[in-house]
Length: 352
Image 1 (cartoon, rainbow, N blue to C red):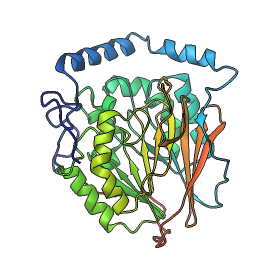
Image 2: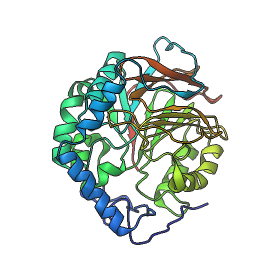
Image 3: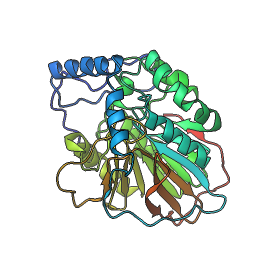
């Protein structure tokens, strides 16, 4: 099933290619079910909210409410599992660049774990991805962590809102202007998608992903993107993305999908061989999951956190750790039988 493009006049991302993006790669913005007036009003409201400093109030309230007890998780968290000795380490976080105290705490927790790489699930900065947003709400908070690790980010809708991706690519020059790409670390290959661009069967991005998955011999295949395909809040966009990409993930044995966008944490049950996880609690104000927990959801909750992926040839441990250092949830992913050569330690960027 292809993505349903309901409103042909409004784009989640700019209609024309944003500055900073590689001109050799097709740019195909995904259309979103929003009307033009709402789209512009919401962006103006977001801009005013952050530029006024009002964004700090929700964080102060949340910190006060959670000063004694962290927000509870709903479902069945997994029991703790230790890292394998000498394993590869990748930290994952998304929806973080608000300049909040929770963002600073999360960065400190990641740094304490000493990963070699940080993989983001988008919305790296708020509100609009302007240079001054990056300089105020991202650079100071993550300076030490960026010095100690290699960052492999995914784009989110807030990164796009100013219509200029130059500040984003200036901070990640190793991406060479690529909005979607893949990278390798030991026995794992990560396929980073741009969920603000089309992912339907007729899109250049899905054609690229299909080709990359087909030639991959990695023991672990991981999709990394912003908007979740499977979650309590996925909505029509997520369902349509899954309808389009789900068969491809199953065909090529993708074991794990990492997403953000929802400001909290969620781990699904394994669906057609794939585990879907939402990690959107990197520093932006969190929100809960209303209503009944769907059957596809294993555990979920509104808490600031990051993920710790430690893996070797035998297994991948995925651990959710909150901004105070408490382990919230743990699960494991098994490798494919044909384990790829695990001698490669540095990230290798594969051209889009």
